[in-house]
Length: 200
Image (tube, helix red, strand yellow):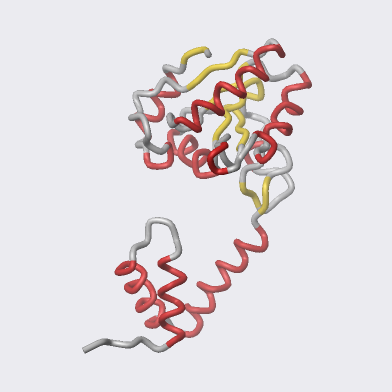
């Protein structure tokens, strides 16, 4: 015998299932949990989603997520302003910050060069990175894209643009398995990869 969920519940399950890493069973568990929330808890949950969606934007400097014009990392004058770590995604910034071992600045590309997906350099925040490098303060750019075909292509492309500026370009030393994601790498492995980075 088939069990039919009410339409609002079915729609809620579908929304959870559309999230990355959430399967149908997990989506159903989450949806049923939401139904156990009090009205005030449900409102708080939905308000948090709406607030994040409407107030979070890209930092004017590094393009990381922030609710201000300039993010706290860029605004922190105690950080090493001669080094910029270039990452694909804001989640990668969070991964590096968890190590507590990197004190430089970041630049978030919001993607990788991937012709097969129709994503070229102009779709990324590369022009903004080059603008940041024009003042002569930055001495090293660490390219910390994932060790995938797209990550390597992006690293090589950036290296060709940055090296002529007289800035040292390095790449993470990957003891990280090829094809894996920085977001899911443990702090020790990530720190060692950062510590043992090599020049391109």
